[in-house]
Structure formats: structure tokens, C-alpha cells
Image (cartoon, rainbow, N blue to C red; front, side, top):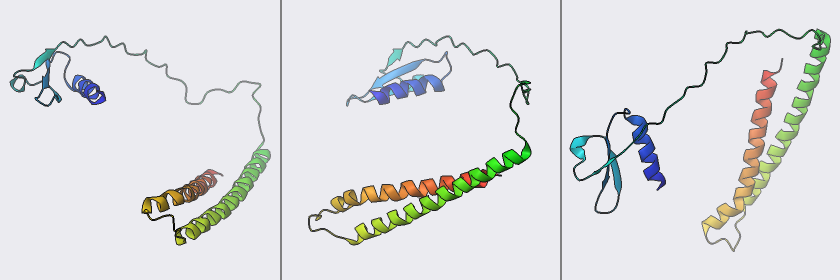
Length: 155
């Protein structure tokens, strides 16, 4: 049913609004849609009405640099630099911690991969046992990559 609806939606999107669409059903019950009249022998013509499409109003262009309110708090350069340095230090600490966790997760995975339990005659059971360890390694790899990307973006 989903495929049928998807095909109808695709057919409607691909053809101009004035085109005719036929629904063809073969001996096996498979449906096929076409907009080519020569291919539509024995097919049922679908009545398709196009909905009224209302476009949203054009967005008002905003100035590139919005003016700040007069009471907007301002930070001097030295304060901002110290905040940036503190943020960088925290990110570096998190990166070091995450790298240690990644190394530990890789070690645990390697230990598990080297073991073969007698109850795991089916290889799928081995894969099922290793999956949480692989997920843990992937999580820490992603965290390390994100922290490195964030560190690269700092000033």
C-alpha cells in the first residue's frame, strides 16, 4: 500500500497538472501507473485534481547586521579572551578524558573479540555479544571527533 501511494505521489509530482494518469493492474495484482496513453490499454483512468497551492508570503529582507539595543550588555576584549581560554581548557580536558574512555573501550572490545565462548556455536551469537562493545567504541570515537571539531572552531 505504501508503494502504491508513493508511486501515485511520484506520478502526480512528475506529470503536468493537465496530464491523464492510468492505473494498470496485471494478472498478479501488481499495480502500475502511467501517463502514456499507448501503454494504458485495459487500464482505468484516474481522476486527479490538483490542489490549490498557496505560496507563502515573501519574507521581508532583514538588515545584515541588526542594531543592538542600547541596554545590551557588552564584554570587553580581555574578559572575552579569558572566557575563550577557559572554554578551550575545558574542551581540552574533555577531549583527554574522552580519549582515555575510547582507549579503554577499544581494549574491552579487543578482549571480547579474542574470547570464544562454548555457547556461541552460531557466529551470530558472537556478533550479538560484541555489538554493545562496538557501540561503545563508536560513541567515544564520535565524541572525540566532535570535541576536536569544536576545538578547531575556537579562537
